[in-house]
Length: 318
Picture 1 (cartoon, rainbow, N blue to C red):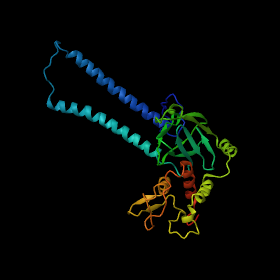
Picture 2: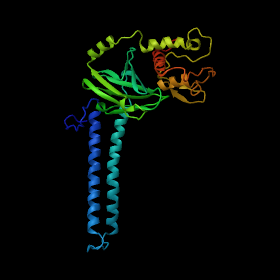
Picture 3: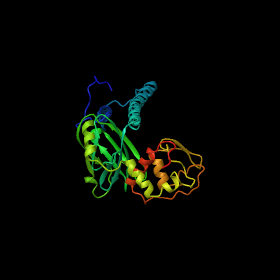
Picture 4: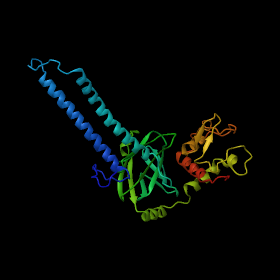
């Protein structure tokens, strides 16, 4: 966006890095819709009155074939080209919005009837309140414990569904400190209307102070290591295991070849499926001995296990 151009603005603050462009897109589409709807309505009203039953208007067809083709083409192609511009514009925004930068602060989000649960990398946990630092990219890794929810922060101009059994992502960079509403934008049951909370944007120094005050005994990865032993994962994937199981060191972010010949990116969703639906993406060359933990591990514990597996360097054996 050109910083010299006047910025159209909704009633809400433009908190995120792409809020201004979102407002431009919304404003442009609104103007486009109003102009064309008004023009069509005026034309309909004019011709309805002029050619009403009993009027003396001349009804002789005087439009030649060439003129008719030009007229028909114009009112079809001009809106089409304008809509194509909006499509490309919105598509460009979507691609930028869906690709978080490397090094973004990752916060795990679990939607649950009727609350939002947030977990920071250091293990700090919050309910219905999310603290983030000013000016730092923040990536939210989201899932749901029960039904579909949708995290909506109007000041950020972002909304993303939290879906049971899978992970979705969104990211933003907050530009102003303050306290802003967050909501659930997907009807999720009796108390859907009260499922909300606050996004609190702090200076980096204040955020570090808050992390220290909200301290916890273990980080997400540290808590995941304890769960790794608790659920018996080390029995097959540990350093002293005699079971032929895939290595987990350096797994996250690599490409895995499955038994049926597919290549799958080892991201959060892949690791979750390996734990809860082990037969879905079985690694090539390994026997189907992984037990199914579906319904036996909570979403919060799954997030911790994934954080631990993600923290393992290449070649490490838990």
